Length: 270
Image 1: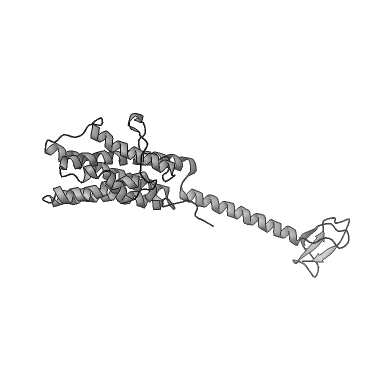
Image 2: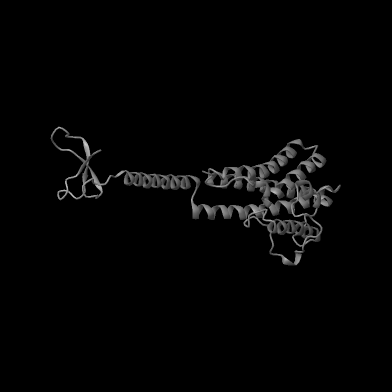
């Protein structure tokens, strides 16, 4: 018997892929620009790591617990929200401008995410509940000269012009855009997980259902086996009935009696 519920496959989730870029970008951002603030640097790196790792752990937990999967994905979402605030604080405390949603560079970062989402959709790499925002169709263009299956390094390279910039404001703004993308994807995942749990129930309910189905199957097999073992009356050919002797030398012992009794008194030892 295979698994009751599939699990894993988190590496193909757009949320995990984008969270990986955020984690790598944050690690190198903190290493480059926050070396003098080790406590803040550690907190930001841990928040970025928590966002990524909890998506993976939630995906694995889905095999045995819908509640655990939901809890872990929500932890990922909360960790990335904390990281979002840290980058906003970084810009605000230095009085550096934060990109608006319609700024050209913010639109370009978003467009790359949309292209990756469309490419993943065409190659069935992600669940349809986990797609990058495609509502702003004016920004959507078909990707050109890009492989269908993109690895972590290749995905990061698409954003390298911002994430490897010597300008910390550009790096922080690009990472803010990417965190917003992950958070949107996670919100959709959480909504889909909640709907699936309401409609299909959790792992324990699936397990109980399978157990009851197996019991019914075994009962059916037992009934079939008993039917196969029922002898025919040697006198009239009718099916016999298992009975228990009430008196005499065989009192308490079972025997096969003809179902046509009292018309037929055929008997066979059980």
